[in-house]
Image (tube, rainbow, N blue to C red):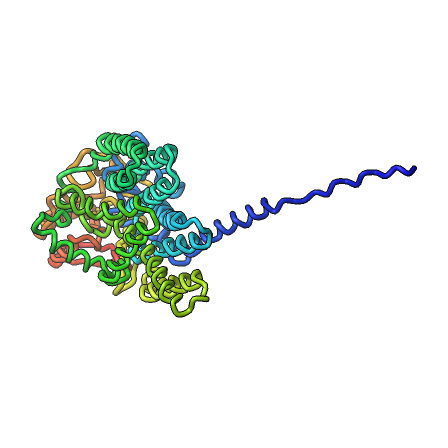
Amino acid sequence: MVAVEDAPPIRVTSPAPARRVRATVGEALPIIALVGAFFVVNDIRSWLTAQYWGDEAWVALSVRFPLADLPVTTSSSPIGWSFLLRLVPDIDHLRVVPLGFQLLTVVAAYLLGRSLASERARGILIGVVTGLAVLLLPVQQTRHDLKQYTADAAVAVCLLALATSTERSWSRRRLAVVVAAVGLGMLLSHTTAIVAVCVLGGLLLSVAVRREWARTAEATVAGLVAGALVAAVYFGVSARGNNDAMRDYWDAFLPSVSELPAHLVRQAKALSPMLGAPVPILAVLLVLGVLTLFRRGHAAPAIAVLLLPVAAIGLGVAGIYPLLDPRTSHFLIVVAGLVAGIGIIGLADLTVAVVRRGLPRLAPGVVAAVTCAVLLASFAAVNHRWYRTDGDEPGVWRAHQAITDIGSSTRYVAAHKGPHDLVVVSGPAWFGFTLYSDQDPLKLVAPVTGTVGWTLTMPTRADVILPKPAAADEQSIKDALDEILAQAAKRTPGTRVWLVRAYTHPSEPVWQAALADYHVQRVTSGPEPVVVISKR
């Protein structure tokens, strides 16, 4: 009898790994596409190479001092933000930090939108729409400066995304992540304190209304812990940046109750170009966005979004936080863009319902995608002049950093001044001048009166003169210049007096009026030329 060997078992490869790979790629591709779109919409090179203007210069200067001075030099900036800037190797490329947070905002907006639908294709469509709505907002092109406002927006959108995820799949671990994000956010963004109250309030109210008492207790505990973290960071670090000069600076954006209606109307009109759409259209989309969140069962982010303007108005009227300034309210504007993006989805849902009555065989996903594409393409077309701008787009937007020349001016003077010449630097140009005098040692002086709370001196540069702070009106500027010119006359014959000033500062008209009585010789070109002054 012939022995027959058993045939080897046939191995059947499970298609599950291949499906998982395809699913992972499918989830990653929209994010990759949005990241690519970010680099298309933004002129990254221009923003990374532009010189720092006055209100950026002191932030950049803070990285030149020892880490032990960080609690002082961070001033009104969140301490975590100032620390992140220190991690950038090249001081000329510090704007990579605000740009990074702007990109994070777009990705977080996608993730929030993606979580609004369990069905994959539908979720990706919502995510892409919310991500593009945030990316294409014209106001995003105004916030490439070296301040924490893009972090404000990123933290706000991230917290809303975490709240959406937590409500959908409730767990103590997810609540703990929200609380941890609040603690981290406070180090990067002062407005985390505002957003955290609204987000945790939304989570609390959403479960309390449904009488889910165990979750209500957990949300309450999470809120208390988050509140403790907010208080610890604020009173331990952030409150040091508050001062009378800062409060006076923001006074126009702290309306009283009687001033509130006029303030809201005025600022809505002023912000309209940065929103990219007329306020009435935006209002409709905002209402649709909130209703869409409620209709899809996401009450927590919907409630948080409704609480945000209430909190912002309350803090503005109370004189605590500026209301509807383009910078300090950047996070509110971006959240409005996010909710408007969700409103586009709501409008697409309505379009699908109408179209299917006449064309029932038409795929609803196609109708929704086409509706969203048409609306977003129209928005981008209307606002095309805002994209890839270098910040100097007449009739659209002129950013300070795009029209400043303080770095070139400072370096020109250093290369061409004589050994006995004097260099006068106006107060608004002081931080920029010292920043770009990168070969000279600096000495920190604090505390001082002013919004920043500190200044610095150049101990090895006796030739550099900063007029007294009192030199703010025409006559005081003339008195200071007369004294400096008299000092120069006593020096070696041929001694020149150079003047470096910030032309973008509101005090520039006063300087121009004061200089009318002197002989002024322009020695450089550019938006902020250096001049040599002498008696007529």
